[in-house]
Each structure stands twice: as structure tokens, then as C-alpha cells.
Image (cartoon, rainbow, N blue to C red; front, side, top):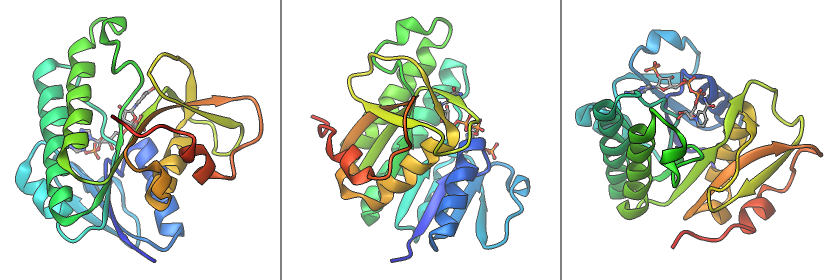
Length: 217
Ligand SMILES: NC(=O)c1ccc[n+]([C@@H]2O[C@H](COP(=O)([O-])OP(=O)(O)OC[C@H]3O[C@@H](n4cnc5c(N)ncnc54)[C@H](OP(=O)(O)O)[C@@H]3O)[C@@H](O)[C@H]2O)c1
């Protein structure tokens, strides 16, 4: 059944892939961007706004069935707290109040911020945003991409991991596919996982990939 999906950061490099997959699937897509003139796509509803602005978030989430958050954080501690913790929390709580699903793009190294010198506070704010989503009551999936590449989708296998111990690369197009599959597969709900490309054939059975993951505690 077609759904209305808000993509916050839908003008970005991963977000655009998410928008393409959703529209190809027949979903109604709403993009939130601070500068929506960047998008210029037919059939996509545009909302100008910042995730750090609660009134913009309220407008953006109103009427949607699901939200994908693909937002690049500011690197300064105050900005990352405002965007990646408080902004994500606002989205999560708004979504929870209407039973909308949230797929949050996070990153690897959330549980080992000391390994990212100079960006530790940004990573910690991201971790607080993850936890706010888990606590919100919204049905959710947290995707932690490893280092992003611009390889096309489906060029290689995908490994999903949990526990945040690895390092590697994943293509933006594959991450977008995972976000959209997470909206379709209930096996992804309540899960947090890291994503890596590795040699081998592209996955075809996302339900099985998600089904092998443990639910969050
Ligand atoms: N680069 C990596 O290797 C890497 C690794 C792991 C995870 N990630 C994460 O993966 C996600 C996708 O990365 P990407 O490189 O594809 O992203 P990107 O191209 O940099 O796009 C990010 C989007 O964030 C939006 N954004 C930034 N601040 C915002 C705010 N305050 N309110 C609303 N939107 C805001 C921007 O939208 P507008 O400018 O249109 O407002 C932009 O479209 C990001 O969360 C990124 O941090 C990246």
C-alpha cells in the first residue's frame, strides 16, 4: 500500500537515492530541506525547514506514515547536540504520537567516540539521538553506515553487523536501499545495525538479512 514518507535530508546524496526508490515504489514523498530549491523534482512535496526547528518538524511530520532521517550533522558540539540529539528526538516524539515509523541514518563508532578525535562530541550527540528514538515509542530502525561511497547499488554483497566493532565502506545507494527495505520489512523494526559492502552477490532477501539481527535491548 502506498504510504506518505517524509525524507529529512532528501536533497542530500543518500537522501536522493531514498527519494528515487520511494517514488519508484509508488509512495508519496515529502522532502524536508533547509534549501528545497536544491531538489526540483516532480511529484515530490517540498517543505522548507531545519530539523532543529520544532515547528518545522511538526509541519513536516504532520500527515506522514513514515520518516527517513538522512541528515549530516554539524561538527561543533552545540550544533550537533541541537540537530542530532534534540532534532532527532523531536522527530521521534512527533512520529510516535501518530504511530509513524522512523528510519534513522546514524554511523559506525557511536559506542567508541574516542576513536574519532575532534568529532567525539558530534558522535556522542548522535548516540543520544539514537537513544531518544529508541525511547520514543515510535516504531524504528537505526542504520549505521560505515564510510560512504558513491558506488551504484547492487554491485556487491552487504554485511549487516551489530555491536559497532567494525570498519569499512558501504555505498550510499545500498544504504538507501536498506532504508526503504526497512520500511517494508517488519523484521527490521527495533533493530540497530552497521552496514558494510563486501565481495559477493548483492542481497535479494532483505527479510532474511534483517531477520538475522537481534532486537535492541
Ligand atoms: N560520509 C560518510 O562516510 C558517512 C559515514 C557514516 C554515516 N554517514 C551519515 O549518512 C547520512 C547520509 O550522508 P550523505 O553524505 O549522503 O549526506 P549529504 O549528502 O551530506 O546530505 C545530508 C543532508 O543533511 C541535510 N541537513 C543538514 N543539516 C540539516 C538540518 N539542520 N536540518 C535539515 N536537514 C539538514 C542537508 O539538507 P539541506 O542542505 O538540503 O538542508 C543534506 O541534504 C548522514 O547522516 C551522514 O552523517 C556518513
